[in-house]
Amino acid sequence: MKTSTLRTVDRVFGVPSCALLTLHRRMFGRRPEGPVRRILFVKLAEQGSTVLAETAICDAIARVGRDNVFFLVFTENRFILDVMGLVPGDHVVTLDASSLPVVVRSTLQALRRLRALHIDTAIDLEFFARSSAILAYMSGATRRVGLHAYEGAGPWRGDLLTHRLNYNPYIHTGDLFHLFVAALDQPPDQFPAYPAKPPVAYERTSGPRPAAPADLTAVEGMLREWTGSATAPPIVLLNANCGDLVPLRRWAEDRYIELARRLLDAREDLRIVFTGRPDEAPGAERLARAVASPRCVSLAGRTTLGQLLALYSLSQVLVTNDSGPAHFATLTPIDVVTLFGPETPALFAARTPRNHVLWAGLACSPCVSAFNNRLSDCRDNLCMQRIPVDDVLAETLAALARRLR
Image 1: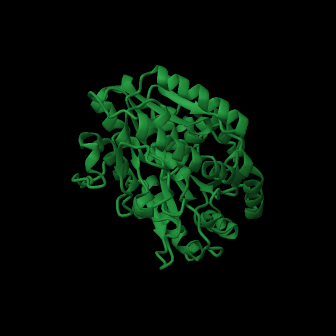
Image 2: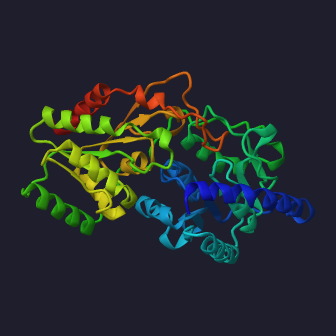
Image 3: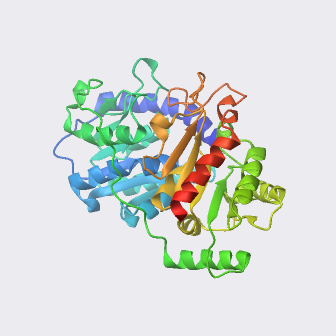
């Protein structure tokens, strides 16, 4: 289903469901009992935020052991968990959201499985999605952590949580997820007061993941066929997001074309590859043709997700807007130049020295947040338009020079 459809379903069916389940909780709900033994994370969508939850997942593993940590996610997003390798593969429970009847059937199956696992703790990592709060409640967990819409600070989703955190827009998302797990040490009745402090310094718990040998071999074959050389040349990847789910985040297509041409002019040994999902392939092909160079090609839709990560491992720099690729690319050795506009890097930038952020910082930016369900009335993304090609070119060439020296 489309993101807009999922939002409509979440609102139309979620509000009455949250109301009924809130009534059920107040009449029959159980208080948390005993120690934390089995933890379920609920993060259905947004691959980038799943990467930002790495420290939180590691905190849970340190608390209860890897064999007692589970994750609930949409089927299309589980691959990032497989790449991260923190949660055992058979502990990832998936929901198929391809259509409304399928998601209903898939949800019932997932809930049966979760209840059979005797989950006692659920951590809802979504920003005010009603479906995730409902799933956390119906999982059978008596201890449930997540965001609560105090005084209208976000979409209402009932009173289904035991540890009800107030959303703080001054805490980076990775730190916020860490605090979700740490909240388990606090008495439920004290929230929204929360005496813990965010981490002073965020540290990645692990380095880049090695690409699967089969994926590396496949991508190396593609590059040899294209370049005619057994040695991979320097490669800059451009993720133009031709089908971006949040159109305000787009950097103009003509700027990607200009950037590609100027990069090729700057280095005669350089190759440019446009990347993207299968539905973005026509747009990416159009951009590659517009560059009009044999040293520029589109591989959008022509790689599996594993092969895409292998391509990242074989390339030097990725240029992308604030989106999933900006985050899961940080699981590989590639440098990333990330263009921020309607959202703020203070909350969502990947925290790694290999991530180089460009943000105009206009007075109207950010306009998309957890408070407005990531929707905005803006129809003129000046925040992205004010990021000039000159700045992106300079940042990309600087990163490339560091990698090749």
